[in-house]
Length: 228
Image (cartoon, rainbow, N blue to C red; front, side, top):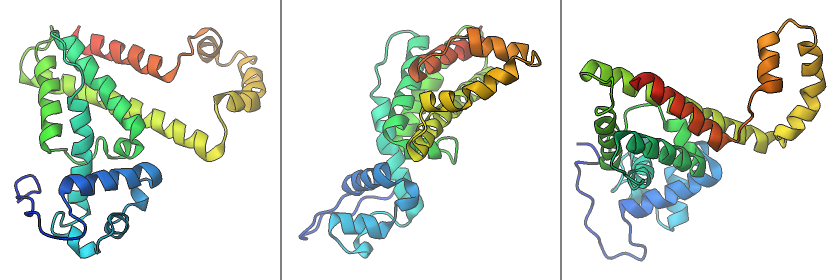
């Protein structure tokens, strides 16, 4: 049975009471601080003040631990505002997913991997699919699958890119202003050759929005495209 079908062990008298919720919360705190590479049952047990073997009564392996962690994040996404229209619902879920991933960067590493089948993940998936199924231009299951695929690909790619850029800035200390100052003169010389006129227009005349604005703008463009 999956962890979602297997009953949680009954509470027992112990100096440190445990639960799957408590284990997941501790794992998330460690992953937020150190990433998934720094996550292990032994470290979680030490943080909780228990022996590692006690945790195996609640989660049998690392995959189940990740399942618990991921579904806690989806619980937050599931609480996103739901408005009457299909479009607002899809937008709310997309923005809530981005915000959750920015608060828990390890979540971006897991997005797009194996299916997320916890109860909250399924609830988010149902809400998103049900809303998009009501969109104009979505006629039948095949079109809904293609639309969901395109939308999810954009959301996952955009979130991963933003998280990667944030990590790079932290790791190198090279923010966008420092990057532009260091490489700007080279780029200007290259653009002045006239060999890259379209790139030049984008760099010089294009809008350079903040990440949240970029995500919102591009999300709208994608949604218009797949439902138009």
